[in-house]
Image (cartoon, rainbow, N blue to C red; front, side):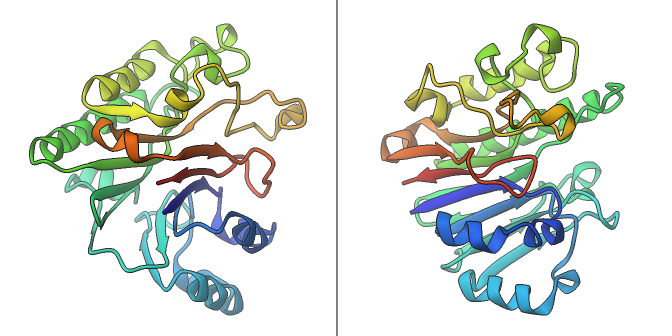
Length: 255
C-alpha cells in the first residue's frame, strides 16, 4: 500500500501546474492533500471527474474561512470509517484534520498550523500539537496503530533545513516547536524517513523567494510519523523532491 502526502498550496492552482500528471507518476493508493483551499464544487468539472475516476472515495474537510487551509483524503478503496477534526472547535474550524480507518491502522491527514512571521500563532500551534498528542495517546492506549502524515510546519533537527543557525528564532525551527516532535517520538511514534535515512539531507519545502528551490535552500516540513509497532511493516519512505507544482513536494510511504 502506498500513501502519499502533499501540501499542494491550493488545489486549483496545483491542477493547473500538472498535478494530474504527477499523480500518474506517483500512483498512490491513498492521497493526503493539505492546504487545498477549495471545495469539490469549485473545481473544474473535467478535472474533478478525472480525480474521482482515480480516487472514487474522497473526503474533504474545508476551513470555515473560504480559500484558507483545508485538507482532503482521496482513496482508491473505501476506508472503513472517516472522522473530521479532533472534536476541538478552536482547531476544527480551520479544516486541519481527517482521520480515516484502514485495515490495521488509523491514518491522520494533518495540516499543522504555522506560527506566523510575527510568532503570534505559535501558542495556537503548540496547543494543536498538544491536543493531537493527547488524542493519539488515548488511541495507542486502546491498542490502535496510527500513521500521522502531512505538513507539520516544523523542522525537527538541524539536518532538516539548510540554514539552521539563521532560523533558530523563526517559526518552524523554534526550540519549543521542535520539542513537540521529540514528545511525539517519546510517545510511541517513529519518524520513519529519518529512521530509514539517518544521514540523508533532503527537503520538502522551499520558499518561492530567491530561487530557493533551484539552490536547494529548503526545509523538511512534511513527515510520516508511524506507531513504532507499525514501523517494521514500512518498506520505504520517499521524498519526491523532483516533482514540482507546489512550494512543497510530495512524500510517500510504502507499506
